[in-house]
Amino acid sequence: MARFSFASLIRNAVSGNARWPAQWRQAAPKPEYDALIVGGGGHGLATAYYLAKEHGVRRVAVLEKGWLGGGNTGRNTTIIRSNYLWRESEGLYDHALKLWEGLAAELNYNVMFSPRGVMMLAHNHHDVMVTKRHVHANRLAGIDNEWLTPEQAKAFCPILNISRDIRYPILGAALQRRGGTARHDAVAWGYARAADALGVDIVENCEVTAIRRRPDGAVEGVETTRGAIRAPRIGVVAAGHTSVVMAMAGVRMPLESYPLQALVSEPVKPVMPCVVMSNTIHAYMSQSDKGELVIGAGTDAYNSYSQTGALHISSHTLDAICELFPNVRRLRMLRNWGGIVDVTPDRSPIVGLTPVPGLFVNCGWGTGGFKATPGSGHVFAHTIATGAPHPINAAFTLDRFRTGRLIDEAAAAAVAH
Amino acid sequence: MLLIHCPYCGMARPEIEFRHAGHAHIARPADPAAATDEEWAAYLYWRDNPKGLIAERWRHVHGCGRFFNAVRHTVTDKLLATYPAGAPRPEIDLP
Ligand SMILES: Cc1cc2nc3c(=O)[nH]c(=O)nc-3n(C[C@H](O)[C@H](O)[C@H](O)COP(=O)(O)OP(=O)(O)OC[C@H]3O[C@@H](n4cnc5c(N)ncnc54)[C@H](O)[C@@H]3O)c2cc1C
Ligand SMILES: [Zn+2]
Picture 1 (tube, protein in one colour):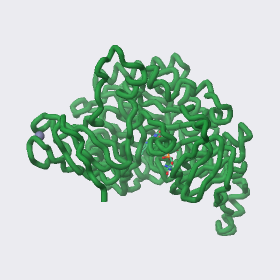
Picture 2 (tube, chains in turn yellow, blue; picture 1 turned 120 degrees about the vertical axis):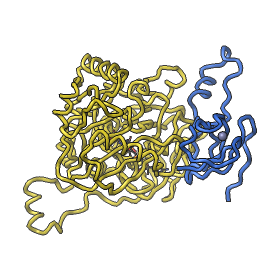
Picture 3 (cartoon, helix red, strand yellow; picture 1 turned 90 degrees about the horizontal axis):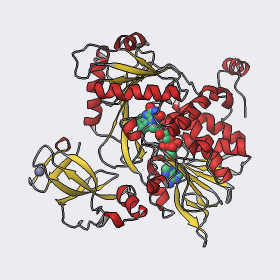
């Protein structure tokens, strides 16, 4: 792997940037591995990287039906934060946030992690109570989160409209200063490159079509559009398609898949220094380094694999954006798109074992898993390598929907994360 | 936005008149006190989440107010049938 450094940047700049080598191999699948990862999004690639790096499991392949990071990893609005309500979630998401802080150096790849602060707005009395409860819970757990008055919120994000006479007035906000954004593609590419350098095969255009089981029930391997592959351990990290893949092993999941959409505006000069989220009116906004305003909307109401959301959902979000940020009203939207998110009943992920020996699952991140990418891969690699969950993901079992030990971030985080 | 045919009103109306109400034909355990954890989990949480045909409930909230069921394809979102609550799921052959 050619390392990126100041010297290599200079060298390649003077040679017209024509001599950069490929950052990872185009691997063809081998007949057998020690572990297979189904799904080449950020979570799958991170899992493969930590398997190789921390557990010495290097005969690993990541099987991706399309292109690397072409799923939700490449479609999300990249908001990163860890101010969740419950102890279990705080542990998982803050583990990820700590890894984000050192990730570019760890991977020798600029993932453009930018802890510019994430502000979550409160619009009514209920929001104020819930948000303050989060602030207190987080501070007890040692996670930074602070309450801002409307004036303080406006000082932090000057384009915010804090008039009292709008439909959803701003009564205050929670601010996590360590939160922010990262470059989504770079996260997939950085993990892919680092995993490849440790010997992991990254196989694109390779759709898993069946999971084969031994007579004793344990997994034996998979069938794919590029042939059969054997492996004693399989980790399914297929986001919106998890139910489809798990059905290949006869496992029903507590998941529903919905389209979630986002939009970007035409690029403008820097106007927005932070991320602003409003769960109550389903609107999220930040500004990319290219100058586009990146806007996230809500999910459609019904299950779908269409990868497009309905127009009335995004126009509802734009109504809210125009009210909260009146000076962006005249901007045109350049693109909008959808991704299929896998939502659990308690809005918390499932990371752990399944009833099928050798089969592991990492899913249910729904509308908010980008922020967890490094932490999710890290604890899932531990789970696959040792056959038992890491203490950080121990509560996020599939079985909790039978026992009733839910981690109810649904009530806690409204709908989106 | 979908155009949804309400079987009670007898006409196709825009999706925003309706509210989606989850998977159809999921029966609550008849004797709740006797149901096992597995049965409760199946009723409350396990879902087929199919990539293909799904039977789902809709309610015509801004119309007649009544619940009915629909069969929809989850890749095209095309509604292939709507039918009154209580009626069996229609057989639909995909081309
Ligand atoms: C519009 C939108 C906005 C979002 N905004 C945020 C946000 O601001 N902050 C945040 O934290 N999260 C956000 N999310 C959620 C976040 O994107 C996801 O939780 C996260 O990216 C999931 O990562 P993943 O690697 O599990 O999934 P993916 O990146 O979707 O990867 C799964 C991969 O599995 C592959 N696959 C599926 N089936 C098969 C098969 N049979 N064989 C082989 N491969 C298969 C898919 O092609 C896909 O590439 C958003 C999501 C969307 C759609
Ligand atoms: Zn009606």
